[in-house]
Length: 182
Image (cartoon, rainbow, N blue to C red; front, top):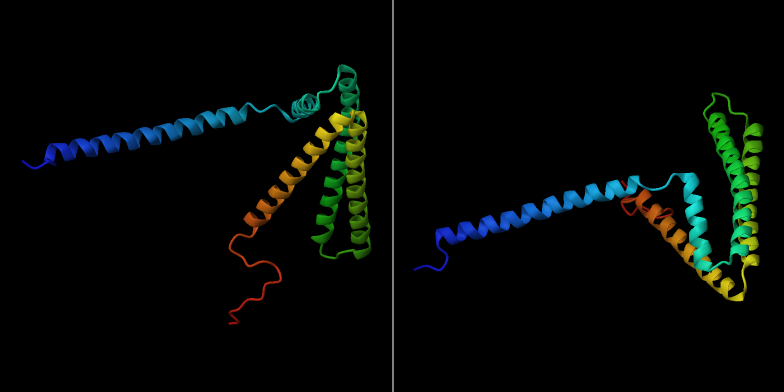
C-alpha cells in the first residue's frame, strides 16, 4: 500500500490550509490590536507631560529638581510654540509670494531673512533650554543627560537618513551623472 494515499494527502492539505488561515486571522487581529493601541496615544498637550516624566525618571530627579524642571519646561514650550507658529506663518507668506503672478523679490528676501531669524531663535531657545536642564543635574545625572542627548541625536540622524532614502527611492543621488545620455 502506498504511504501517501489520497486521504492522507487531503488531510495534509487541510492541515496546511488551516494553519495558513490561522496565521492570516492572527495577523489581522494583531493589526486591529495595534491600531487600537495607537489610538490610545495621549493628546499632544499630555505628551509633553509624559516626556517630562520620562526625562525626570531617567535622570532620577529629586522632588525639588523635578519642580524646577517642570517650570523650565512650561516656559520653554510656551516660547517654542510661539516661534513655531510664527515660522509656519512666514512659511505660508513665502509660499504665497512665490505663487503670485508678479513676485516681489525684495519682499521675498525679507521673508526669507525673517524665516532664517526665527529658525535661529528656535535653535537658540532649544539649546538654552537643554543647558538649563543640564545645569539642574548633579554630576552623575549630567552623565546620564549626555548619554540621553547622544541617543536622541543618533535617533534623529537615523530618522533623517531614512526619510531622505524614502523620499527619492529609485532616483539617483543628487550630483549623479546619468550614464545613459539619450
